[in-house]
Length: 251
Ligand SMILES: Cc1cc2nc3c(=O)[nH]c(=O)nc-3n(C[C@H](O)[C@H](O)[C@H](O)COP(=O)(O)OP(=O)(O)OC[C@H]3O[C@@H](n4cnc5c(N)ncnc54)[C@H](O)[C@@H]3O)c2cc1C
Ligand code: FES
Image (cartoon, rainbow, N blue to C red; front, top):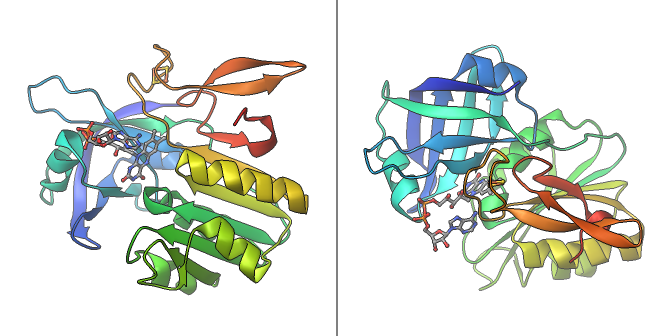
C-alpha cells in the first residue's frame, strides 16, 4: 500500500557533477517497496511544483530507508540536490508495479538515468547476472554492480568508457543472451532492446520513464499504447507500469 511520509535525509552526496545520491528514512515506504518501483518526491518550496517521479535505487528494510540516485536537470531535482542531512522531504510511494523477478540467467540493461533501479533488482536476483549499461559519456554505479557479483559491460556514445556505441550494439557484438532481460532507460533504447529480445527469444521487461504529471493515475499524462487482442489500449505508466512486458508495448 502507498503512503505519504515526511522522509528524513540520512545522507546526500554526488556520484559526479550532476548525479545526486540521496538516502532517506521512510519506514512505511521502505517496508512495502519492491525492485523497479518508484516514489513521487514533492518539491515543497511554495511554488506548487508537481511531484517528481524517481526510481528506488536501493531498499534497506532493516533501517527503513530507500536510496534515490537522480540527475539534476531542472527545478525539482535542483531543490532535492540541495537538501542537507536531517532535512525532511515529502515522499509518496511505493508507486507502480516493479519487476517480476524470475530465476535463471538474468541480463540487466540500463541506459543513463535508467541505471539506478537496476541496483536493487541486481541485489535481489539470484543466479548468473550480466549487467549492460549505456551512457552518453563516462559512467556511474559500475563498481556497485560488480560488488553484487555481476559481470558488467559498459557502452558509451563517445567511447570514453568501454564499448563505443549503444547497449543494443554491445549486446549484439558480445552475443549476450540469457533467460530474462530487466531493463530501464530511454524509450528508443527499450524499443531496439525489445527487438533484440524477440529475435533471441528472451523474455524482456521494460521500465518506461515517461514524462508524468500527477503520478498517481488521475490524469492521462503518461499513457502508452499496449497491445490488446487485435487492437490496443492506453495504459498509464505511473499506475499500470512503469514495468511492462516488451512484447505488449506498441513501439
Ligand atoms: C517512473 C520514473 C522514474 C524515474 N526515475 C528516475 C531516476 O531514478 N533518476 C533520475 O535521474 N530521473 C528519473 N526519472 C526522471 C525524473 O522524474 C525527471 O528527470 C524529473 O522529474 C525532472 O524534474 P525537474 O523538476 O528537475 O526538471 P524539469 O524542470 O521538470 O525539467 C527539466 C528537463 O528534464 C526533462 N524531463 C523531465 N521529466 C523527464 C522524464 N521523465 N524523462 C526525461 N526527461 C525528463 C524535461 O524535458 C526538461 O528538459 C524518472 C521518471 C519516471 C517517470
Ligand atoms: S501521470 Fe497522471 S495518470 Fe500517470
